Picture 1 (tube, rainbow, N blue to C red):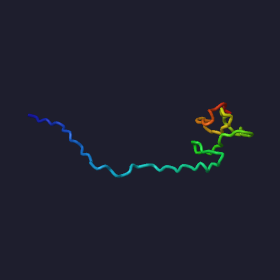
Picture 2: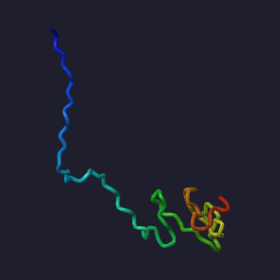
Picture 3: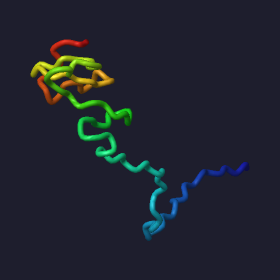
Picture 4: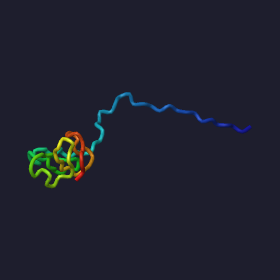
Length: 92
């Protein structure tokens, strides 16, 4: 008479002590100091120093948008432009 074999599940052993090793991390770049841009500038999401929104004579020189509060923005990206100034009135 032929014999049959059945598969038997063997439970895996679990190590009761948690690992004390730290997970691998990738090095992160040090955040740039906003002061490196100068007092009338800020560092945008691309890491580029951009002139802060301004009002007054000559403010429109190089501006990319006119904000709803009358200030001019020099933003290089549309996202977030004039966000603290009521939004964009007109793109230049």
